Image 1 (spheres, rainbow, N blue to C red):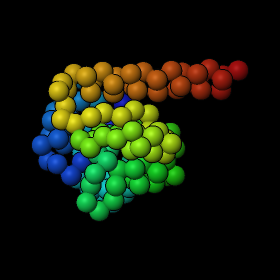
Image 2 (tube, rainbow, N blue to C red; image 1 turned 135 degrees about the vertical axis):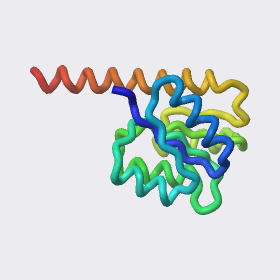
Image 3 (cartoon, rainbow, N blue to C red; image 1 turned 120 degrees about the horizontal axis):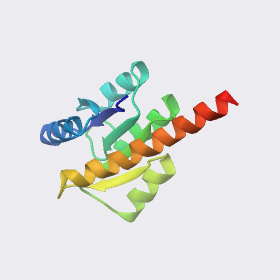
Image 4 (cartoon, rainbow, N blue to C red; image 1 turned 90 degrees about the vertical axis):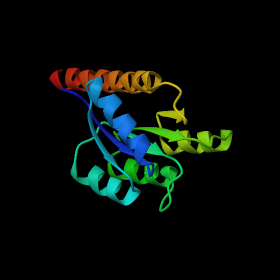
Length: 135
């Protein structure tokens, strides 16, 4: 089963690039360009991974991350930003982010690698949960 990914960014070019690349490497991808829509999607659909832009007009990605973790704590969230500071990175990890990627993306393959590592971590957790249920 391919893991489902939600990508949230207010830049259409970023959404298109991530949708195309992540779909080509085997993920089921849904995109949206506003945090409110993302919260609605998270509450009604199953996603394993979310990629969130930090700087969006109506709600920051960090605020969105916190809300996602309240609704679905198991969703692994990868933050993306063009404006990196150590404080922002720490805020993301304290809010529950599993990774942090800088824009502009020099290489979409690097993002694919980070998503693959996150997906593998989820698979290991799912396998461990199945084993503990069988015991």
